[in-house]
Length: 428
Image (cartoon, rainbow, N blue to C red; front, side, top):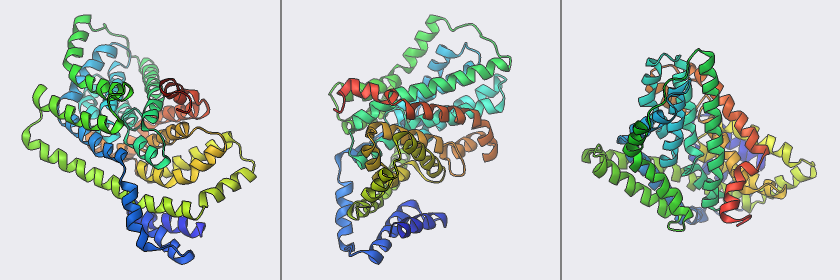
């Protein structure tokens, strides 16, 4: 039965059937073939799965990212980042990474970060004399931090699926996100020095202050989301709604670069993206319920334990599995499919569910910048006009850097667990 389920699932995806439909179809066919599963109960299961307050955060964060991407918030963040690190060797590419880290913290979207930062920085980096690989590699890879640094839609999906605190997950992504962002900057700095780029004059304090003031309202969104959640003012869902309203307010009334005619298109795009995610979640709920109902996770957990597989080997297997799946599937889909199987095993081996969530999201981050379906690669290709192969080759050094970061975070759990344990208490 297990073999039939997964063979059907991957066969349907291989022939081009959408992931959501593949999940639902493979589950129902397997259930009808091998069990007394009642298909009439499916609609109520789907509704119960989607009728969760936390899921309302997804369309709100998507909408906030849409408003910010359309306005001048991204260019203001870029100018601020350039004033801080632009004088270093590799200053412009480093500024692109720094700006991506900041924009990731206000948008929660990886493709949106690539579009917002890449469309401005790609030409500027090339004009400054940097090789094309520097221009495209930094933009495509740094943009992937959008799903790791909170707010993160993938963390929300994981939290709902694994029944874990969204607040703890958001906090768990902060230090790993900053660590990987710093590692990307270091690689860029070393490469630029080897290419002969030298340190330039640091921007005067007055210029830095001016750039900060110009980006102030956009940067305050980070304070609104993170400070609101951890100050006890908002739940993550309420913070998402507040961020959408705030992003609209500053883009339309403060910066005044969002036109009334743009609002319908932004709302439509947010609705379409949200609908796609919710359709995947709905079908994944059927898949997850069937696995649980047939005790498949428990069966696999017992097999792993009886085989005397320890946490180190298990996490290695998890990384390989997620790395491969992330290359072919959308992040939310991978999370919804694998969590019901991997979480019981991880907990039986003493691995913290929050730590597992961070590992999964970083693997999805790598999947966003690896072929054949890495979304960031296609977005970067569209921005620059380069072929997909050129973008892949250019991104390779930075992708390997993220891979090193993944290994560090996988086997040093304190990197992801220290901050949530500090904020919430151990196991809180």
